[in-house]
Image 1: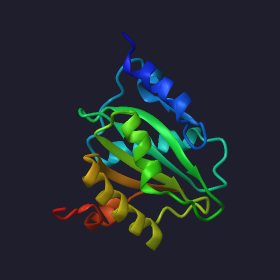
Image 2 (image 1 turned 90 degrees about the vertical axis):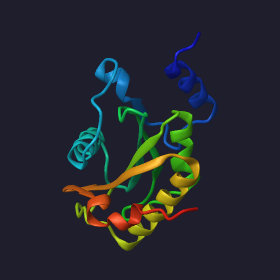
Image 3 (image 1 turned 180 degrees about the vertical axis):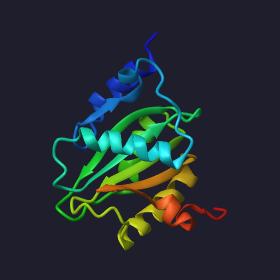
Image 4 (image 1 turned 135 degrees about the vertical axis):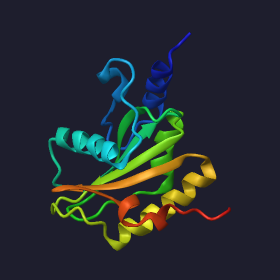
Length: 166
């Protein structure tokens, strides 16, 4: 019987991620990565991920998939944009979450300028993704903007995650 990681690897060959760049957190951490239950832990995971990226001169939208016990599954670079923008549609974001059988996700993107403050487009994107996640049953835990430091949109604008009854 194939392990979950083997099944996901086969699926990735059939349905590749936009950039082909991802890694399994569990494999790297030797089994289970520590659970993420606070904004500080989420920011630390995001900072660790962005510190590993060799080139952050373009905006990138990334997703950390998370299991039912809040253990990270894998990082996915979903889109690569330009110097000051990236396009992210719900289908690209949630495709990787569905392929990983994730129950939650943390979204992150970088600002090459270094300013981690979320812009109007970041706020609108977060609202749209939180609503889509509610429909799919995949909770968006946070959207963290990385630059010279990290900024949690959940802390800055918690109303973005308040999903009314659908």
